[in-house]
Amino acid sequence: MFNELQRNVRDLEALSGLYGEVSGVAGDAAPVIVAALAGAEGEESVLNYAEAGANGRYLLRVQAGKTYRLVAFADRNRNRRLDAGEPFGALDHAVTAQGGRSVGRLDFSLDSAAPLSPAERAALAGLAEVKRQELQIALGDQVDLDDPAFSPDGGKKGLWAPTDFLSEIGGGVYFLQAFDPKKTPVLFVHGAGGNPREFESLIAELDRKRFQPWVYYYPSGLRLGTVVQMLDGIVTSLRREYGFEQLVVTAHSMGGLVSMSYLKRLAARGDGRQVPLLVTLSTPWRGHEAAELAVKYAPVAIPSWIDMQVDSEFQRALFSTPMPPTTRFGLFFGYHGDSGDGTISLASQLRGEAQTEAQRVLGFDETHTSILHASAVRQAWRSLVETAAPQH
Image 1 (cartoon, rainbow, N blue to C red):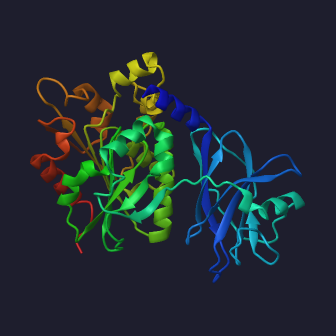
Image 2 (image 1 turned 30 degrees about the vertical axis):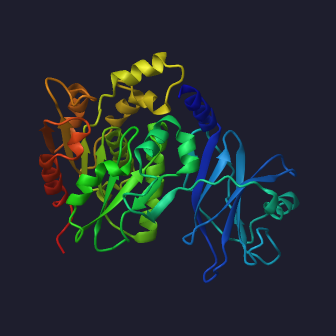
Image 3 (image 1 turned 120 degrees about the horizontal axis):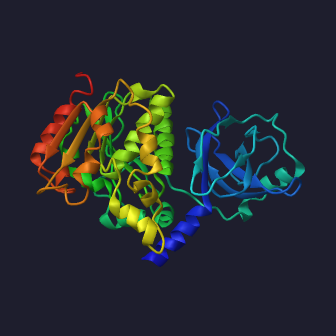
């Protein structure tokens, strides 16, 4: 297991992602190709390329440590090469890819006034020779909760083999029903080694006349800052496409840290009103002693363990800024016996700063997993969620 983890960590350090949106030509149905070029001046080559979605969004998997120029063109004759007369454009600055992280908001338009060198034009004429490396990130893909990818084995792969997860499963935000602009989305965020099926009981409680369930499925072995960045980029893209105003968030265990960090990113740029309610269940607000020991003594550390250490830098930063004033926060914790829920201690679940930010703090005699299914928890959760969206 640790050999596989070591390979994944090494691969992760060499991996990065570039994402953004390309504005095309109005009324032009041609696919838009986005290419990442690198190399010395006059020797540029395409290292990877992707086809932007119908809404212009793109995601490129690239090698970390290199500096790229992003160029896009409308492939009107669908031959995977830039030909005369096809609109093209380029990002107005170079981008350096960082290991284990994505660089986003790389938006530009097809503007044929953008200069291209002869070497760049030649590179864009040879895409057929480029071996593509794809990242299949879901941006509102509609699936069922029993999708094979949402298995315990998939969740385990996300923890112990995060780069394999990205290559084989992809992850992202999935819709469990067709999007309905009249219904408020409820996003479910799992914890370490988790998967969306763990929320089956809570999802069954949703009033489907008012709410629509979404799930965020991600490789939980990644550094949490990267997971938050991915979530922010995906939800931003979905909001641009679908125009929804608000999003309710429910998170279990480590997913609560991810969700709280996401909310505070929104608050920092003045978008806090987008999430009227956050409910977390059994979240280790002070980290976990086992993660700290693993980072110190394991042959190789799962990257997310670094952020899950007791009072890690990630956790300290999490409570250095306030919650959005318009977001209600329900903190659910579990106890079973005299201490915590069998996985997370009460001291971690009930960190003082987290309690201070919460409007509701509710405890349940449940384990770390049974808290997701218990009748009393489902009822309390539903009562909070139903206050988060107006009746139609």
